[in-house]
Length: 111
Length: 114
Image (cartoon, rainbow over all chains, first blue to last red; front, side, top):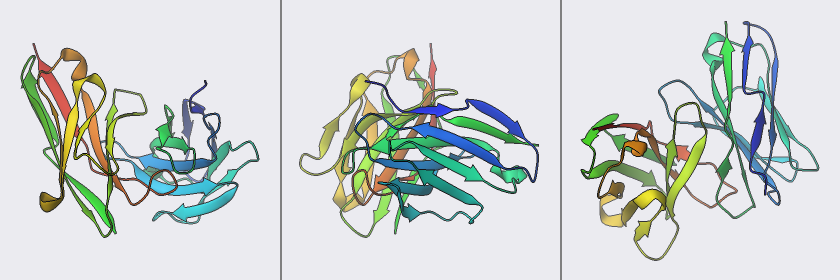
């Protein structure tokens, strides 16, 4: 059974650019959540998708957006990148009422 | 609203000594509580979770935690530390399993001395 995978592993962008991060959920999982983990801090909830619909959102501006596809994989898009967007972005999948399983994360650096 | 406070951002223990990581939570409904471990440059791995029922929860790698409603606490312990326990540990709370956000504490870094 393949776990949660994320791509890319690392990337570097400059201020004002746009970025797309990808997540493949674990087999059988229909819910995907995204978290931002700044250096030295705990993960912060960005939003969650359930069966292709947004199912809750944290305190992040609209330039953070997402998608979930029919195969339950997901994308996180961030527009107009700011320096403070530099962080580890974690994706977690769950089978609805089950626990969340986390991927290894994407390290984003904004210069 | 839900939140977690982890007491102590850094804990240093000797190999073979007790590991105790403290977590207090706030939740307006009966909480689901979790402990995750994060090794350098990796994602989060679930150590254990409390949902309902028995308040003493056993997890992987010899860790356990006790849910104390009266103290709103969910402290993590391991009787004997191993060098491989050096990592960052996060306590988290949620109102539901799976289809609801996790709210994390700021984390506690554990260092194990030989």
